[in-house]
Image (tube, rainbow, N blue to C red):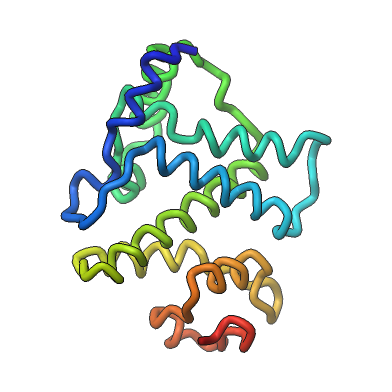
Length: 187
């Protein structure tokens, strides 16, 4: 791994396409995603496919945006709208540049935990932006809450109850849903 090139993550600003009151770097984001992943592994009811599951999840979280050291921060909605092959080709070229080809692959169960932690970190950041007076990111905040919602059978999934409690609010975006948030997280 080219550690010198990965240091670029310290200077790559997330949300460079939006007006924010406080910008964070990709390195800061990856650190917080790793901390959230550490806690989510304890909460989520997943079958552990191999003995090093918590460590594997934390490693995947720490490295999940490593290619952005070469590619820069590609916004979620842009990534989502890109041709999957074109995106895979870009990711491969970035991995080659960083000398990490094939080192970021991991099971889908691990990716699911990291994706959830990634969305939760974004929700926390967006809430902080909103609370600092920035209302320009509300649409992204609504979409992010949609990525966090988890229902198992007739109950809220434990990771969603924890996430909503961590955020300290019942999101207004869920009031139109048929389910009501558990009392333990209402404020």
